[in-house]
Amino acid sequence: MAVCCKCKGVVKLRSINALGKTYHPHHFTCSDCDRPIESSTFNVVKNEPVCTACYDKKHASRCFACGTSILQRGVVAVGRKWHEKCFRCVSCGKSLVSSTFFEVNGYLFCKSDYRESFSSRCAGCAEPIAKNAVVALNTKWHANCFKCNRCSQPITGESFKIEGSRPVCAKCTK
Image 1 (tube, helix red, strand yellow):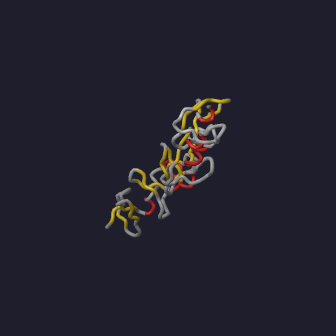
Image 2 (cartoon, helix red, strand yellow):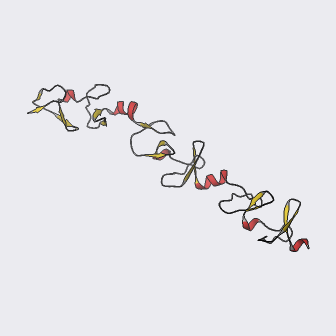
Image 3 (tube, one colour):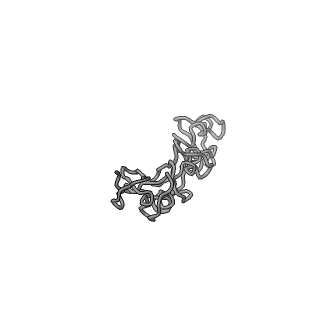
């Protein structure tokens, strides 16, 4: 004969077996609200049964983006928890799950939007500079944008002069 773990009485007819224990059906209750758990779906907190409503209210992780409970798979990133569907670039909305992303003041950006918003800009074309830059005239340039203002040839490793805040190659200044 089975014994109910709550009342220690013998369970004669129907029993519920959960978490390695046996219960009378009316004694299989939520450890938070003490209501009977009538669904086959319940959660476990500290090895005790908790109904779905109490779990959602008191125990479930909350999504940083939308504030609702995370009851399925979630993402943990930058010290916060997110629904997979909410883990997106703030600029373009692209999913960041399994992607490179950047966080700025709590906002998440995909790689391209981060570069667009926060990278240094080339003094020649005004586009973001992703990697190596030529630093000249107190500004940054893409290597192929650092050109002579007169002949438009790239200035590479040679000396140059400044003409109206623009570079001019040594050949054009002779």
